[in-house]
Structure formats: C-alpha cells, structure tokens
Length: 401
Image (tube, rainbow, N blue to C red; front, side, top):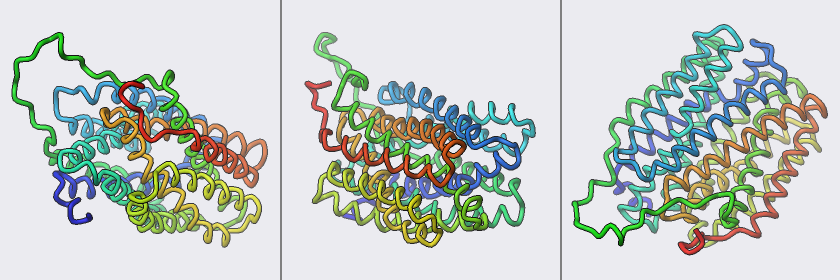
C-alpha cells in the first residue's frame, strides 16, 4: 500500500510541503506565549483573547473558502499559494512591528487570511488521491498528517536553538524562511483535475451540488462539536503547558521544546500504525479511544504535577493526537465524499473553534484557578467528546444533505 501512495500525482510534493509546514509552525508555536507575555506584557487571559481573535478570523475566512473552493474555475493551488503568502506576512509582523496593538491587529488579519492553507492543501491532496484510487485515502491522509508531525519533531528543537542564539528575532526569522520555502514549492503542484471535455447537456437535468448546512444537519453537527471539544482540551494544554513547565515546575525554556519534540517524534510512527489499524477498526471507534486516553493524560498532569510524569505521558498524548489529527480529516471527508474542500474545512474549523475557546478558557483558568488546575478542565472537555462520539455516523448520505 505504501508503494501505491507514491504513484499519486503530487503526493511526494505534498509530503515535503507538509513536513516543512509542520516545521514552520513548530519553530514558533511553543514559545509564542512566552514572547507575548514577557516581551509585550500580555496576561495569560490577554494572550488567550489574542489567540481567540485570530481563531475567529480564521473561522470566517475558512468558512467562506470552504463553501466556494469546490466550485473554483481555477487551480486550487493558487488558494494555497495566496494563503501561504499571508502566513509569511503574519510572522513578519513580529519582526518589523514593535507596537503591541499594531502587532496584534496585523497578526490577526494576516493569520486569518492564511488559515485556508492547511485545509486546501488537504483538499488538493484528496483530489489527487481520488483520481488515483480513493480506497487508500485513509492511509494517504495519515501519512500526510504524520509528515506534519514529523516537522514538529525538529521544529521545537530548531526553535530552541534559534531562541538561545539569536533570541526571538532568530525564532521568527526561521519561521518566515520555512513558510517561504513552502510558498515557493507550492507553485510546482500540478492540477489533479484536468478540465472536462465540453458536452451538450440539458440545463433542466443538471443540478449543482450544494454543501450541507452544518447547523441543521445533526449528522455533521454532533461530530463537529465533538471535535471542537477535543481541540478545546488540546489548545488549553498547549497554552498552559509552557507556563506550567517553566513557571510552576521551574524548568528551563528548553524543557518545553523537549516535550513538544518528544510528542511529535512519537506521533509519526503512531500515525502510520493507526493508518493500518484504521483499515480494520472504524474511525469512530478509534476516536472514542482517543477521547478517553487524552482525558486521562490531562487529568494526570494536575494529579502528579511532575515533569518526569509529563515526559512519560507524551506516549498517550501522542496516541491521542495521532488519532485526532491523523484520522480527523479522513473522518470528515468520508462523511461528505462529494465535498472534499468543505469536509476539510469542517475539520479545520473544528480546530479553529477549539483553539478559540481553548485559548480563552485556558487563559481564564490560569489566571483564576491557577495553571496547575487548568488541566482538569482540559480533561473534562475530552471526556465529553468521548461520550459524543458514541452518537456519530460514518457517512452523511445524499438524501440527508
């Protein structure tokens, strides 16, 4: 099966781009909260509002793009290229804008406009996969997402080195370079859907398919909310973990990078393994398992309050993320096989809404309950998602749209 993947048009390029995209995000991700709180003086709640605002903008831009991306008259790669250019501008803001408020506004605008890069890259990959053989889509998506995690294996370590040697200027400059590399390589993506030969058709016999309404279709709404809750717990963890490790446990900044890299390193083989498991076990069952395992890990952080236990806990965390991030995109694409762009956007928007709520709650929980207690709330959200997945479907059929 692995050999078949490399016969898919653009697949090698998609793998390379996902790896570099993972590195681009991971270089900065673990340290951004430290930069904004220490350099620009934001409180944990203020940082949460900052990230939530970026998530709101991303949600609206993704929703608009998701609605119309499956009906584009031009190659989808140009959406990806435009979005990546916006991501470059977003991280350039940290290098050239010293004023806190102007920086916040600039980042929110450009980051929101850059949000479609990831879902549209997945959608472009799914079109290439379907053109070759749709039966290997789950494995193809798992490998693709594992490469993003592979980038996270090195990204935090590279970020730690850049931060130690060149301070935050080197950190953001490294991020901009990585996004620029992905931006340039995206021009090499070949069109996976060549224009169809013109045919004479009856206007009355043709009906353009319309994507379903999320709010009125329970077959979409319930899994969407479940994924939102999974991401709420995850983003609360991502916000508070660096502050917990450095501020509460008294570890060095490099300890944050070690945790992030260890988790990413474990994710890669687990994602590949889950790709094989998914051919025998339903995605729904695996997501139920992920919700339970993840909730137990987050609860354990508050119980043990130990960096050593957090290191050990990277294994269950990596398994949770391997299933959530590896199978999530395939789960939504299988729910809506007619709408790869819209399905990919639903997955991305669930992450964005989860990021919004998670950052807000994470900051508030830190300031009001203490960072050590915030992980109990993270675990509760994952446990609720664990329950919700028992009520989800495998596919939304045509008559239900």
